[in-house]
Image (cartoon, rainbow, N blue to C red):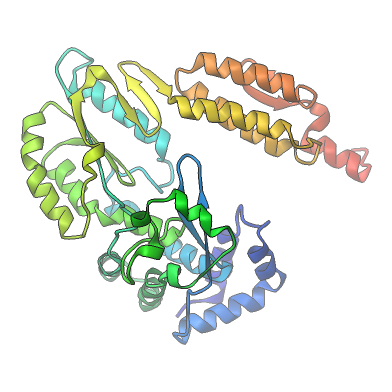
Length: 393
């Protein structure tokens, strides 16, 4: 049985960074009663997950995104809260997406470390093999994903809400959001997406929803058995991030001979490679890894990210900046300066600095030591509150 106190704890997690959305606000007005109602639905097996909505994002490339109501979002976070320790135990250490303390930057740095190790500090031959899956989320088999999650719960979870977890996982994975959603954006937006990449063109039982936490977790586990086989049993050094796999090896021929067996194992879970994105090349040519160009000891942001940073900073200057929204502007600019600083994009970092000072110099100053922007003390959150409430302390 699911306890109310657990739902309350998870609710605070679920609403983080979502408190401005209309659905979250509506739920929060009477969240105690809403959580009691959710508890009743779960324990009486009356839970549904048919309140969803869909939209299209165009950056960095057009992609279909699904979101769900706050009630179902709490369920997603409850599953993640209970199963996260198990995920961390069973997932391969080379899987970097959707895991705390890992992520994109860690994946790039691990890749660079593998290149140094396999090439013995750039003195021996080594090859980089890139594998990409075709329509990874849109072509996911719902039954395969649910079976994997159910097996995980039955084998490793021993809490009193074990059967409830299986029930909730069943409901949210079989939600079929394309058939149970509202669309609040123009339908023409979907013209930017290839038809085979939209869940609206998939039959029931096919496709994972990008944007659902439960599916983000499910798709990390989806190919885990295969990546563990390649990494732990066969000893290949790999980096896995969603549907991108980067292999760094001196045993190029051995890996290429395994390709038919890898395809066979992937076919069992209805996954196939994208032949157009496959390459195998010497490490000296460098490689584009998750938006970063890595070559020897240098690592650069790709040109599209750099251009996007300039465009975003200019776009922010077109809105009226004041002491109430300047913190958001600061966070956005420092996002790009941080990426440029972590990579070897010194020239780009200086461009962000000059443009930021030119457009927002009234509100922020450049911190030379940390290589980022800081708010001028007058506009710090503390001083803004003092002025707003006429405090003297």
